[in-house]
Image 1: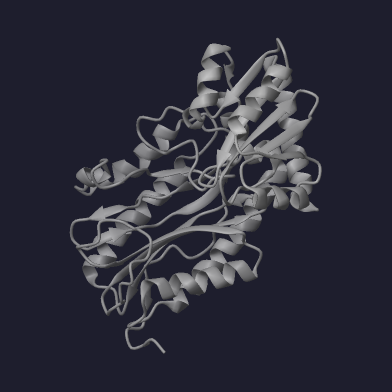
Image 2: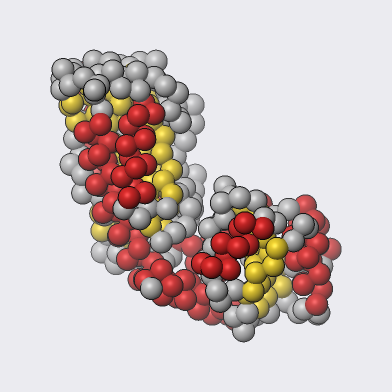
Length: 374
């Protein structure tokens, strides 16, 4: 019932935004990798194939899917939708658009539209729906933020499971198996997760490769559980055995940088201001080279119906931070003396600053090296 209430709130906000923009309909595309734009309107998370939703200003929504099993699932999970299964979703969606006649229509997200829809968008001079949806996705209603908070509680609990699973002799995929079992048992329908294990040779995180944990390894991860469609992320680093002085000294820089980034968060600043606050800490410690694109992708990002969404926290991103956004601040990067380290907390932007959601201690965890795999 809670998820349905959140979906109703989203649809109401979308219709209001369409009316404000003078739009009669929007056409939204999604696939199994990224479907946040589509899910915002249709409340359907695609697992296979592609989908297109056509939403009119009176709230009528038709969902076109190219997979019959997905259509069966949509009929059960989204009974309020008119669901159509088709061998050619672009052609059928285009025919539906033609039936709308001479109306003002927007389509998006622009960067992901299939060629057939993108061409039609140019020929018919459809508006770009991307900016409208981006704003709705970034600045959330209170019902959406409550879902984000629920996901944060499970992110903390999930990291405790991960930490306790780490011991000498275990494979990296075994840690992930324990996390997935825990999340699925607790109502998490998706979890984006990557991992790193080792020392100086580790330059980032990736899917598990079968690496065996050994004493002295830094083990990094980001967990991103999804609750009612909303993702929250936590990033932490642990050591198998006692942390070395070099590891402790390095971690202190990441801790300082994350605090600086979170302290910078408030309405009216830009994403660039947050990134600069983090990066300046590394620069003060002589590590400025390691906040470049050669070693790190972002210093944080938005969270919501996709695990890595706008705004991206980078020094060249001028998006204004506003109340109601949910973000993660994470100064994750390579350290030349110890290897790759991560530390990140999710938050909601309030009128005064940041409501930090994840509560796992901000420390370099040490897991006893004599704890062996069973």
